[in-house]
Image 1 (spheres, one colour):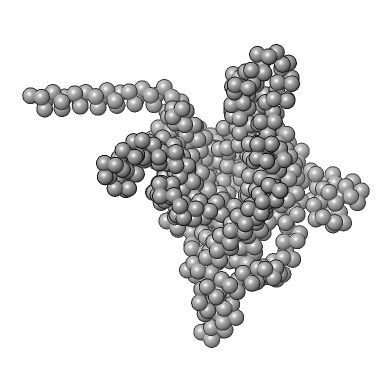
Image 2 (cartoon, chains in turn green, brown; image 1 turned 60 degrees about the vertical axis):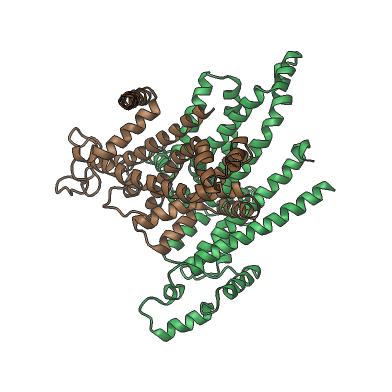
Length: 335
Length: 284
């Protein structure tokens, strides 16, 4: 019963947060200086054309009414249309959203697979070479500009050693698989298309590694810090005094307590990734949401930008909610 | 007589303090590195050539003794540009972090100190902000407002404000009901005075550490904005713009145009982050 109350409470908070998000995007698009009508018709248009567009967009109405109309449009699933591509934004997002999710997921999995083991080992073996390495890597990962790291990887693996393919998007020298989910890797496995699988796997490695390095750093830090804290705690000391073997000490007593902050961190990072692959997508010409946003910004096409912002904010909030619910099952204390 | 003695003591302790600071800076690698970076930004430009001087001779030359970092596609000397870039990037980073702190800190302290509705509103707003893809939001705002340096500093500061609100709030909250605060309130001090004189000094280390991290972050955002072509435009020696300028040549193996300015960003940001870690350790 308590879990239902908890879910209810969190859903109310989610709605409040979403309301906040919609107000902010509304303010940025509609209220900030700069008349969107001029962006549509151009600065040289005559007065009557501008007036007609203003009326069509509802810009002459009072701001609360404009907000109401804007919300009505959002609830109808209408995110406007992009004049750069000539499509409704929802149509454009159908191919780009999976591309970003695919990249973010692969990057997250890579980050988890290097950062968490390294963090645990470095906490267990303090002042060892592994610990030093972990410190250096996490310091670098937090500080390195990801667009520069991406550029360096292209330099080393494409320009010098010719191992990686050219940074030109999701697939090269093969035709994309038949689309089911929109994620090339999954779709090519589902359709048994091995050439497409190989080609798209090659394309995703460098951007995913770039993101995994950058995202792994904070994950490593959190894992290391909390493992340290747990290892110094009273209950681990008592467990050790009771002669519990080291293996079960680490895996049964210490690890579950580290899991909580680490899963939170993973959720925060994954939520961040869904809107934060912009720079890497830009460098690798990855046709995802980030590149869509940048291309749209560069041609003053605002509907797609706001759609991307809204969608990533929404997915961040939902991921955060899911993690909190997950904690309900991981951590008996919250029940 | 006594006055003289006091003055002398004060002077002595001042020089003593300065000596102590100097030793501390020299023996802590990250402080030393930060000092060197600031020194480069301050006086470096006088020692290197004109960052905008176009060369009529060979362009895109690899590093040599005459130009240790090579030249870019317009024949401009990269060393000179990287050194001059330090001024622009550091100045922008510092001003953005300062602006963000000066807005976010009072708001956060006020929210925590007053509690109630204000606190909830502030907390929820800054939480909603956290859900946003900061970079895309900043890009959109810059594109709408125009990419002058002032606009960029303002936008970068604005996206950093929520961080300060939350940080100051969480630092002030446990202090609110401490005895010394109650005592100050009993003595009839105004809320503003209590915040300024009794609470803020106690949260200063956290804020200073955050300030350093924030500077680093501001520099990263500025460089990223310039890298995607929305921020500083090319002849200006800004690090992100320079990485962008060289990114086309990377494909052909001409690495020096992008690598050196990127390295400058990395070293500066790394140093600022290390300084923040260091300050955080002192607190504990």
